[in-house]
Every structure is written in structure tokens, then in C-alpha cells.
Amino acid sequence: FKNGLPEGKGKYTWGNGNYYYGNWKKGQKDGKGELHQFENGKETLVTGYWKKDNYRGEYEHPYVITNVTSEIGRVQISKMSSEEATITITVESLSSGSSLSSNSFQTGTVMTAHQVTRGMFISKSSSALTNKEVTVFRGVVFPFRGTFNFGNSMIEIEFFEKGAWDIIVPIN
Image 1 (cartoon, rainbow, N blue to C red):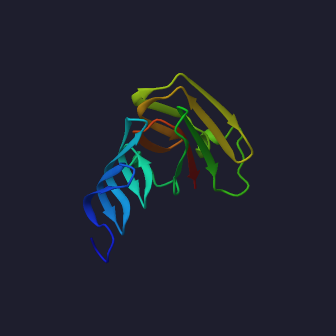
Image 2 (tube, one colour):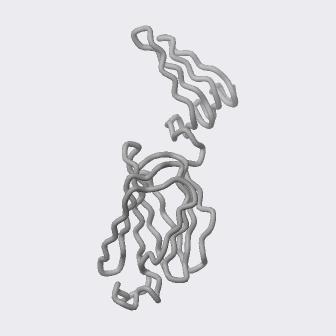
Image 3 (tube, helix red, strand yellow):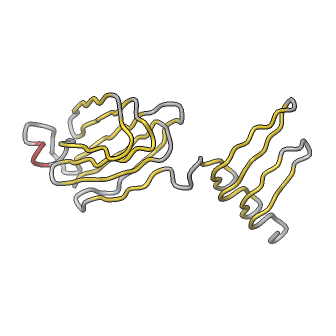
């Protein structure tokens, strides 16, 4: 305990018999742990990582960006749901007045190539809008690692958890 709250590694048991064994920070589940819940004589076990008392998933970091070129701005990655198996990549041009036309392959505002080095996907579709392109990979098998090229720019990402992942790639 620290300042009267659970801190560090330990076990907390609730009055109904449910218990959590793992890491605590400021009285909240935080870090790796196991949540054991009992209902109608059956136990369910949730293992993985918590942050501020919220379950984050099986992995501490559900994805990692392993490589990105300097022309790409701050990449935003969000998990939209855990039920689907899709990766949606939206490439946005940060140059004002730029549009997706026939010269876009030189400016790098569309995906020009991709290479999967772990996992696989069943289908891919793309659509171009005024200043961005959206590519959706469906039926993704996780873990998934891929390199995505946008002209001379590229990003390499690995996903460890199944889900519907949304990626925004801003190109300068």
C-alpha cells in the first residue's frame, strides 16, 4: 500500500469472491494482471494489461510502428472494435491545394505498394477523395505486420491484437 491505496504487485479479493492478481497503481489495476470472476459456479479469467483500472488487452502495446520515413507526419492509430479483423489506412495530403490526380503517385498521397511479412488478409479495396485515399484490408489474420509505401514515403507497422484498426497517415 502507498498512501492507503494498493500499489505494486498484489491480490485484491472482492466480497463476491472475484479477485484480481497483478499490478496496482494509486489503488487501480495498472499493468499486467489476472482478473478472476465467478458466476453460477463458473470461473472466467481475463489476463492482460490494465491502465487506470481499464482493461487494455492481451498485450501491453497492441501495435508497434517499427519504421517510418521523415515525410510522414504523426501517425494516428485507433482500435475501433475488437470484433472485426480489418485495417483501414487513410493517407492525407498535408499540402494545401493538393488533390488526388494522376500525379499523386509522384507526390505520395496514395498507397503505391504494400508488403505483408506476418499474417495475411483476404481482400483490399481503395477509394480516392479530394485530399486523401482510404484503403481497407479485410479478413486480416493477426498478428499482422506490413510495410506500406506512399511514393517515396513508407511506414511499417505490426499489430498483435485482432480488431478493426484505423490508421491516419499524414504526408507532408
